[in-house]
Length: 110
Length: 110
Image 1 (cartoon, chains in turn cyan, purple):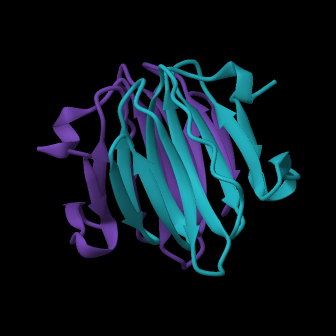
Image 2 (cartoon, chains in turn purple, brown):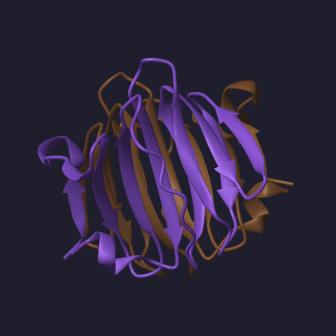
């Protein structure tokens, strides 16, 4: 039986004010679609997972270690394991940000 | 130095008739955006990588082992390692299909 989902049919999960998530994954990686609202409170954090960021909508400043990378739609970056990072929305459009975590994050699928 | 890219500024790489690709990745996973044109020749194949499919545009029948899964925008599925699979475009719209491979595929980034 193939593991599948339709994200359009799944409600957003509210994580904290201004941050919503949908998640899906396999054994080796987890995909998380994040919706970030302008003005959401940044929350610097780090984790052992490698995280690949792919911006689908909006504009965002990604703070990764000591660097700041501005990304718009079509922009991608790699956050190496254990490097502190956070996102900051630029402008007044919600950001849609697909994050790919490896290894998988079963905590996101609970 | 953060590894980053802007896919909007990168030309499509033609793989074969009706199939184009852009790829990017880290140490643990590779993201490949595939553009599939209606009528492209299906090419069943298998690989050791787990593959997570996320459809961004268009409609596609994914043949995975003995199953056929129809996906539209927002649809996702997991192709387990070593299971034969191929995609078949449904309708007349190009499909944009983000594939996440774990482990990474340096062959896609060459």
